[in-house]
Image (cartoon, rainbow, N blue to C red; front, side, top):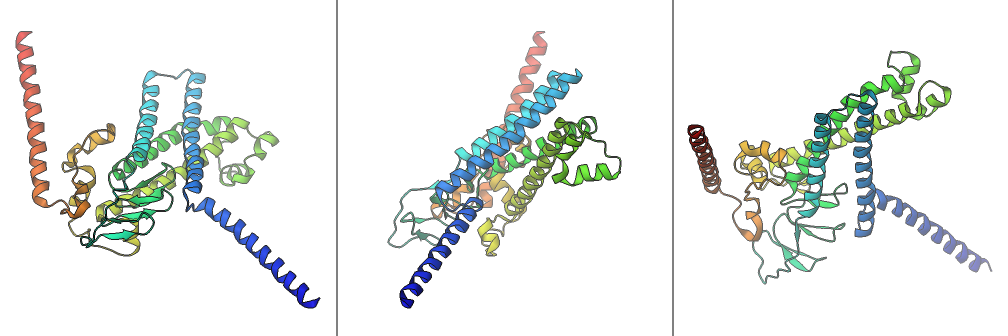
Length: 340
């Protein structure tokens, strides 16, 4: 009897321990997804939170303009441009997901190629398997749950633009919403009430109950806090991505101090992502689908990684193209002015 009871207690303790581990793993899988199912849930959660924040900020700004009769089409145009740029770059990051599923097999693989056990094929250098996408990703940097895609070869430029327009939109929203706090919330005058009301978020909900502010003011205060948190997250990601682009490294290479591809200078590395002619970068900022030629993909299948001769040749060709178009435009304007 004693031995059976002992075995029963051991089995019960093991089952309790396994149940605790399973609940703990479920909690961790939500915050750090490692499967396609959990990654899809995280993508839906984070993307919805992102767009709810953007749309609610736009509605609050436009509602205040309509109520104060300061609405102009210029403000509506500016709001539309910011939301359009965020959406287009967010969508392009997803559409340009740099997957590698060619199913290549080699008896003797080229230098730098290795074998992926999960996908059962050889993969080129800097290509890694993503457990969330469940496929190999070219020049994999990290998996972004806001866009639902891996950041890597071909979509890193759009990810940079997505973060940049996010930061610009948040700064613009903060500039428009902050003056409304003194109107609908409480003024920041240095008193104890204002210090608690602005710097202690758990007490925000008590101010409209006590009659110090309106519920709209409390909503604006929470919106302000979420915008500040979003700006800090997007800013830290943008700084990290620019540092990796300048060094021509990925997160994996930075963590393991692999500097094989970061020996050609910052300007060369920037041209790999943003194109050979960096003076066209403002056009890319305004027009996300602007087709800037890049030879970043030359590292695939063992080809050389964009020699300086190719770089100088493409710069010369692009400048010749721009000069030809400028000459054609000036010639047409001269002819048109003479006819007038």
